[in-house]
Image (cartoon, rainbow, N blue to C red):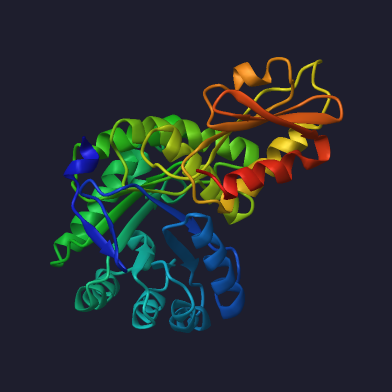
Length: 350
């Protein structure tokens, strides 16, 4: 598999590439200058399963804040830089574990070299990021538009530029809002580099559309053995990005652990608030460290049969429900006690 053949890169103690588990990334949406708010959000994301966090660094104050933020978090921090090479250097001096730049936006070769020299001195990885929206005009003209081939050429040109400066501690990212273009680009670049790849569908959209696009794109790419870190980019709470990423990896068999919730669709037999109950169960199990499948069913007639493949489950009837364990009905409880009954069983799981 491609994933086994990429180089290993150490990001603040978290190793990616070389067959390491696919790492989940997200990005804060707080003002990085606000240390307390940013650290609090990072810690919430870490608790939810985020492995690596990225923060925007648009100002000197944001770069300086990284050193204080680092003291309050326990996962690697990536500084996201656009245009100003001095901010990239300042972020590294403040303790960033990795920097994300697009060398094409940094400017002259001398400015890029200054960034590379600083990274080399501290052995800080550089993520070379290329987005379809910022592709160079000469490549757009060469390929008669934004294409997968153009994205790959752009990314490799930038990686080679940094390699020629004597540094190869790199991660490559090529992103597009066009799902199938993104898939094709990753298939192409996987044959052309052994640098680890950070994978995501950029500007994928809101919770619903963004999740669908990301699941399709990331699913196809990861299932081919391509990709060492991922971000599900959503217009929403970053916690939703982490939740979705965990489900994608677990569905593909790339991550174990955590409770998987399965639930039936609603139908005319449903006599409880199944939609609300399923969502409450999903939120409730997020902090329970078990590797189980939990079923939430809306019908006590078919519920036990449908829940047989789950380790434990609940099914509702009119004003009441049943607790099912390994396919067997254990007890019947009032509807308003179903959630608490399930949680108690999980907290005392044997």
